[in-house]
Amino acid sequence: MRAKLLYASGGVALAFAVFHSFFWVLFDWAAELPRLSAVNAGIMQIFNIVCIFAFLFQGFASFALAKKPGPFSVAEKSILVFIGGFYFLRGALGFPLFGISIPEMVVVMVCLMVTIINLLALKLPQDPGLAASHPAS
Image (tube, rainbow, N blue to C red):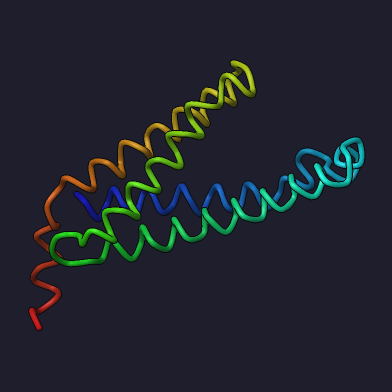
């Protein structure tokens, strides 16, 4: 079960990376960003690129942790807490910053689901099938 949850979390992260890659087109940033100061336009683009990088890291880390036999180390638990916290903050800030709409409700629900998935993965034991496929060293 732990592996399935982490694969789901990683899939969502990679989907968000792809979604953020299309922000320049979806939100017509060629026309919209020049309305901001040059500094603010740059900050928006840098922040979006950093988010894409963070989503890629989260996806690949989730996939790697899904395959890990045995209990998680403190560092691995910290990664799961970071991922859960990232999505919790995005979900919690959605309505105050973007208002209440159907698309935002979907994003908030997905973010809160990923938060819960990562917190559950912290508590669930290793999947039994993984122990047999990874002999002890």
